[in-house]
Image 1: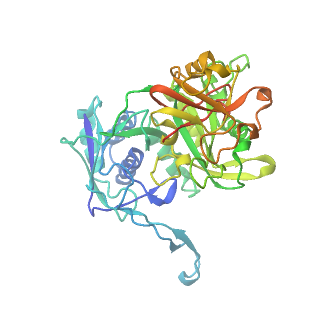
Image 2: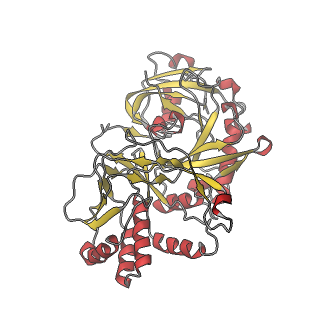
Image 3: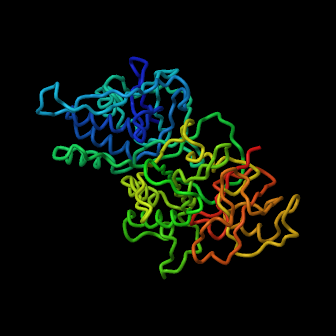
Amino acid sequence: MLALQVEYLMGRVLASAHNDRTAVEWPPHPARLFSALVAAYEECDLSDRAKAALEWLEALPQPAIYAKPAEHEGMVRNAHKVFVPVNDSSEVPESRSRQVRWFPAFTPQDSHVWFIWSDAPEAERHSDALQQIAENVTYLGHSMSPVRVRVSDSVPEPTLMPDLAGNVMLRTTGKGRLQHLEEIHRLRKENTTIQPRLGRVTRYRCVGEAQVNCLKSLFRQAFIFMRMDGPTLPLEGAAKLTSIVRKAVMGLYPDPAPEVISGHAQDGKQSENPHLAVTPLSDVGHRHADGHIMGFALWMPSNASAEILETLEDALADFDSLTLGTYGVWKIRQLTADITGRAAALRPVTYTRAHDTWASVTPVVFGKFPKKSQVGPGKDGGRVFAELCELINLPKPIETRLGPVSAFYGAPKASGYEPPERFTNRLRAHVVIRFAEPVEGPVLMGAGRYVGFGLCRPLLR
């Protein structure tokens, strides 16, 4: 076992979240700690043993974390705008332009954080070198939050554990991260605007939260993007948006794209295996909802390899705009934390939490017409609904309802959507389905599940 203890010496954290400069990052992401270790190693010109220790550390499985509280709740100071003079200017101080900056602060219940690797072979071999690096780390985040870092033998029970079903998303490291950071440092000598790639993102769950033993759909990893600027699109145009997003992702992913990404087999035909799904994320389900699209999600099936996921993460690191043809351009931002204050439509847990009753936000595209006699209160939908659920690894429902209107306020009628040409003559309808026990999403149903149709949410009543 290996554990690194971080102590915030002033009991205060100043560290902006990478995707929101006004929000604080807590707990500190493993990638932030690793970057601080690399900086200490480079600045202090330590031995080759230190470099070998960092290369060993980056390749370990993701650590468990002890941090209290484990979520962004309470005690976060409002980050007011501060206008700071631009550095490296030849102008006199009075004439220099000023840029807006934020300094979000946070006071945790416990100023100590542990990063714990329970599976760390050869830890004894590298612990001395890591201690030498750790004792040269002076701060984590902003320089106004000094820290002391050390290799620790005594560790508490973790509060966050890596878990594919978790809702907390943290930046982590992988093999080659040290080399990438060194290359970025070299390039920044000529161009200071260059920034490191986002890198790997890992799901964590809070230890002790209620765990529900339930069946899971075949989709797992989610990449959530938020519209920051650009034209407002109604949910009826979901098919056009998802088509544009898919083309953009294919342009970012290095060739040749595997079947799980492209959705096409080697012979060019449509893949019959689970692959990348794109869904719009819209403002629905509350009193003032108007159905406009707030962003989109990329859902990867559970059989996608770690290598493919990591390559996709790297490809999406520079995905910050989306050209929508005659509609204009969206400025977008990837969200990597399921923060409580975020709009429900942009939180993965909105689509993944375990529940027994689900309702469609976008209409389900049916390959076969269900029999009216098998749909309705107390009826299970027959073979048609059983097959729809089986395709995404879910059991046959015990009750199904079908209609033109969604159960979520703000979602358009099924007939209002403009479908892809191949779905023009197929039945499109909103559904409510109930299972005998809770199932975990996302629930993407029907023939259009890969292109934005059949997106469901738990019906919480």
